[in-house]
Length: 354
Ligand SMILES: Cc1cc2nc3c(=O)[nH]c(=O)nc-3n(C[C@H](O)[C@H](O)[C@H](O)COP(=O)(O)O)c2cc1C
Image 1 (cartoon, rainbow, N blue to C red):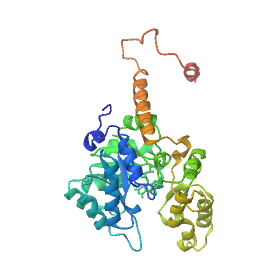
Image 2: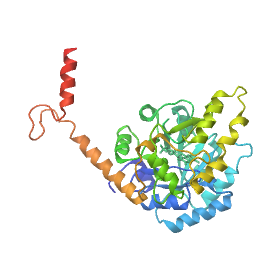
Image 3: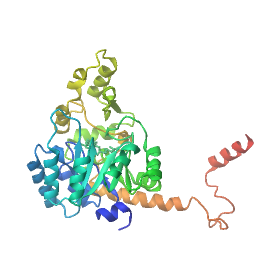
Image 4: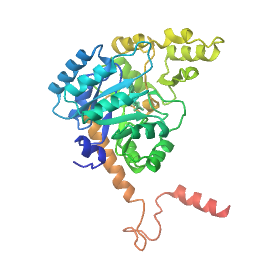
């Protein structure tokens, strides 16, 4: 077990990489592949129409991996909200001991999970919300920076600031979410004080992700500039893949004089978004993706991806140790400070003349 963080210890996983809940992606196939690879796979409860369907999906996942996996329960505003308490009860009854919660007013379900001795990872986009979740008794925070896919919140703070704020002010361990795709990112997150990372978009682009190949290829072909923020006007901002429908939705949102949500609603329909993953037409509806699409260039298996992240992170952390020299010693074969970067030397000279 090369990694030894609060996350690997508490969850019993080999590498501190979590696959975050993903609507219409987080099925047993996805979660078990990530858990088999040594990370933490997560089933998304609301991909299942009823709590009883969730029970079946959990049982299916148990038959596909012997390793720990979790379940995500996302609480979003809805005219007719799902029976969250019933979904939570199935998760508990099925013996799931790791739960990812996200969304509005999670108090009652967090209480339900904590009473059943579950480890709760709560996802949030602000330090203020993180602090409220700590009061509710969560075990880990999953800090979602502005780069992330899906609900980015309304404060637009990227992970460089958010993670250090989390390190400075949170009393419970946290993982970094949003914008991660490789081991360099994992090493950076650990350096900033996180105990691991959470990835969504990167795991969509794996062999086992149960979505159409065309969508995986669309992610590979995309750049970091190819996402859109929709629904800001209604303070429910979501980062989506920047396809034709998302761009049209943004146009209507910006230009509408009435400001009525009904005008944009048909464009952001979740039903059409779900079809995209099945029919492979990337412009059929809106679908969620993060800025990290610019860092994704292939479609590996989860095993290959997790192994690669592990190797890259270890190499990066080792390499970091060569970037400083203990006072009073010099690196073997060098005299004076390390000078293998001529650009830095020139920059140094230029600055000293200022
Ligand atoms: C297709 C997709 C669907 C998602 N659905 C959910 C969801 O239902 N609930 C949730 O908490 N997060 C959801 N997320 C967010 C992820 O769990 C994770 O926080 C996010 O993807 C991290 O950013 P990244 O994509 O840059 O890795 C979704 C992400 C994607 C890509």
